[in-house]
Image (cartoon, rainbow, N blue to C red; front, side, top):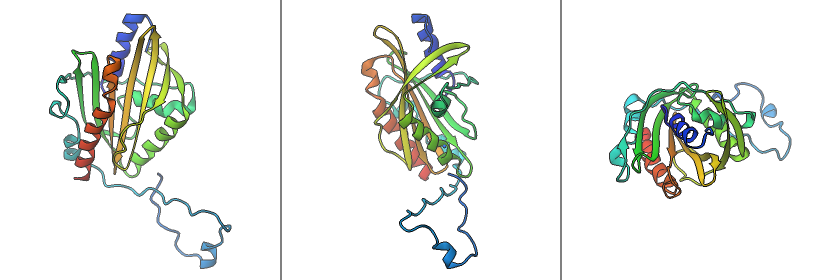
Length: 241
């Protein structure tokens, strides 16, 4: 996501002097008697099958799935960013999957396409990234994020040594792909000022779409679902090939 989060945080600092996914698709047990297969306790629910490994997305699919200016409402423009190696560590283990979403690079993922945009005369910032995983990596990545979105309400981290505390709000975003989730990570800057990153993930097969939308105003914040819908639809269509 290049420096989108970092840039938004830097602006916040300047203005306010404050900062800013299972498992192996193992085959069924071979051998063993029928008695062994039926020896589970009565009434015990059947276990959910392990997530099967999906076919990796091609480079062409990932490039076809990322947003372009033409896919966005009027007023958006390209805004190439700079690669970032920043990492974020949450003070609460259960929140670490969300802190990791602020990083450009996700462990185990290959970034197949990424585009940055600005809107609202530069006040609104948007990054759309398509990531590819091997095996069951995409599902393994999504699982802890979805769990954290339900359990984590806030966490503290730091940016270049400067402490920041972020509130977490699960977003009611469109249900897309095989699974999706959205969270809003925000920080009160005092008064009516607030920094907020709306992050929406959509998984289709072995690929994941990540949208990071940082609105510059309350009115712009209302557009998160529209942007998420556009991004998710384009990605899922490309991933299904």
